[in-house]
Image (tube, rainbow over all chains, first blue to last red; front, side, top):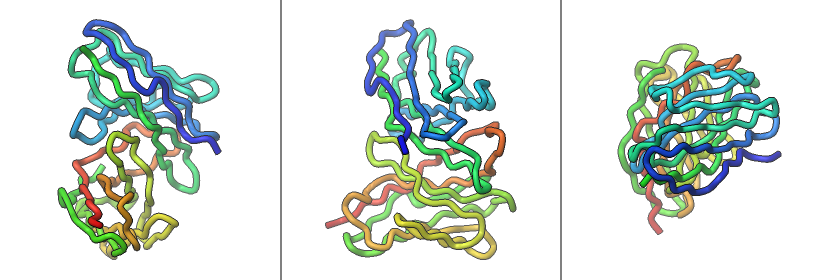
Length: 114
Length: 114
């Protein structure tokens, strides 16, 4: 069983640029969630995708957007990057089974905005 | 989702059992208790979850009080590799993709001493 993978591992961008982060879900999982983790903080929920549609969103502006593909992989896009967007971006996949939808996380993408 | 309270830090000697408490006094009847841990700069790792019965897996045991207002995660024989931030989360699982994600608090920084 393949776990959640994310690419790239690290990324450096400048303010105002756009970035795309990628996530491959664990085999058999149909739901993908994205989180942002600033240094020293716990992860914060950005949004979730299920059946290729955004199914829930945290307190993040519209310049954070995403996609889910038919194979359940996903992208996170961030436009007009700001310095505060520097963080570890985490992807988690899940499948509702046996009464629960446990989320399994990937290793994350470290984004630095200069 | 209900809020949780955890001690900010704990120490435990290597080889001893580590007992991590979590208070969730406002938990509702259909909310599960989930535990994750995060080793520095890695993605959170799922440990265990439960509704009202005690649970055990290869990583840990979860003890939930009868009134469900608190729980304890037990690592039976702690090793140095168990040093991490441990998060206790309560939430309702969703069958069709959830409207919200996991809400991470500050967690407990568990330090295993040699």
